[in-house]
Length: 354
Image (cartoon, rainbow, N blue to C red; front, top):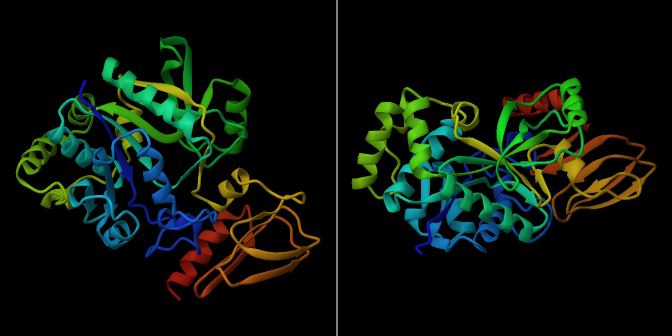
């Protein structure tokens, strides 16, 4: 049987929520946040390459990050790198990636993953994703992998599972999607017990995705044929000239939340989105005082529930803080209450234009 499994790694984000460590010039997917010796992108690629053959793994990234891709993944060929001249959201990335892979293999089943997630159990991850790819091959659908929540997180989207409609073992239809609820609703979702976090991991058969793009996004009724023609003649590395004119949209909102061919399974592999300081604090083990130290040297006195990330060669000596982020990179040291997301955003904006 031919190997029809492929992967599309999304690596074009600018990682602004993890500022100042993650910068536009080198966002978080290109960093070794936890001190493992490998960047988030390298870990993602190497994890997927354990069960999808390397020449079936494609990378979607912004054109300004091509040097970082070549530096960190020298084993990936040019035809596996899909550059974005401008950011047009995940819908455009997935659409172009689907077209390129479909032209290579019209029977392809594709697993899409961001490049900045923490996965704790690789073997369970492999099993769950292969199960998803087998399902979309047989069912010809779109399958989202959700994660059982362990707290009322307001920074993640939620998927409500239809427990009464099991399509295959462990795979159900979807009742609803909710994007980043407030604290009250997040707590209610936890209590109800039939909600999963939307991990951003999903799988599909290329025929089904192309059909959904064509039927659910009116602009793509003309763009998909143009993409197909472009893929016939161009090196896949080259993004269509009309990429700049594509609508700036999210694939979740445009396809997954609207399609009648979407299903969900629960992942069992230990997952965290490394997107914010709050999520890092919640998902990385802390010491006895509740403090998280990320690949940093620090001495602490009478401090609790903080997170610190410093460059190599720097040492922090801290006394009397509680619930703070202490993060340094380059010329910027940020010290901010850990839950003050708006304050961090303002700091980022103010320093960017100072």
